[in-house]
Image (cartoon, rainbow, N blue to C red; front, side, top):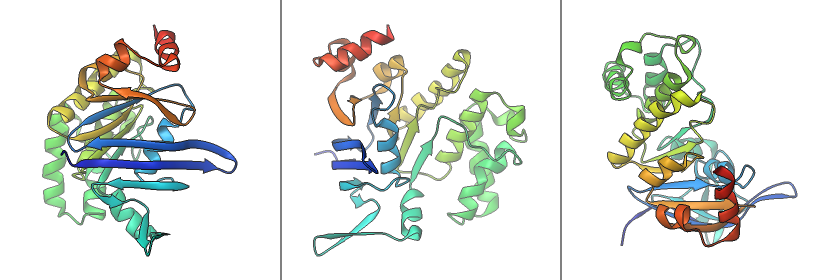
Length: 254
């Protein structure tokens, strides 16, 4: 049986009276790529933020690599972990957002080495060597000394991906990483993500890029109204959806 990197069991998340996630069950095997699709407001981004414990779930259990996220269980009772323990868990999970969130006053290289040095206590020389390798991998070796304002949106997002990978995460989360980009820049970011997938990185991706989901995903999960409506292989969900809500969503994209 394949080890699970993500195991969400009846995960609920409420903001006051608003229920955003309503009993989500989701399993992502180690080394697999799962794409979350669905309309805005369906809970996809909230689920990602719960996996990374940027949001605390209201009910259920959420495991990453076998470790309960955000809580400790003692005597059948869940207790929230300290912020220090939450930060330790978060350090093993890379996340790339819609907005690039680079430090504007630091170069591309400096953006990438910041967390490995400060959080993982990696020696500056080793962090710089790794950062330069990652910049080369994302096609930006020549931009190491450039500031974010000197980079295009696609270049900034590639730096953001390199920054996340520099922490050697066991899992990468992507929250619509191309949605803020001009159409001609989308491809360069997707190419980097495809290479990550080919290298065996476990990835949970919220995306509207159906071509990417079709080509790279092991499983596509369609969410609507805070629930998983349909999931399966890309060819099944995208080409032959069984649920009317999935059919309506996909037809709206054509």
